[in-house]
Amino acid sequence: MGSLRSSTSAAVESVDAEAACGLLASEQYGYVDVRMWEDFEKGHVAGARNVPYYLSVTPHGKERNPDFVDQVAALHSKEDRFLVGCRSGVRSRLATADLAAAGFANVKNLEGGYLSLLKSTSYPQPQAASHQ
Image (cartoon, rainbow, N blue to C red; front, side, top):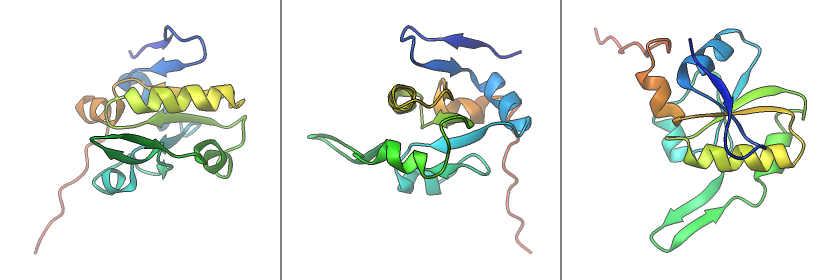
């Protein structure tokens, strides 16, 4: 069974891939993917909403989305239950902390990000397209 635990930052609660699969399967949790749209389009959790945490990433730095919290608030109330994920879990931890600080009470970080879900035995693997 997956684990639920608080991270070193009291404001961010993280769940591992197994726990995340259970929460998503319960249909009581939504999923906000904070990757940039180009990465989101390459593959994402079914039903995920894309709200990029960064607008651009260059060798010179990262440009944070100044409207991130407002854009999430347009999709979810502060009482809604949802997971926040990115590719590997770093960006989503930052995004989850921002959301918790803004008053979102039931938001959880997906530890290890989308990559951890893809490796999870509980995650429904995408079906290959059939060509006839």
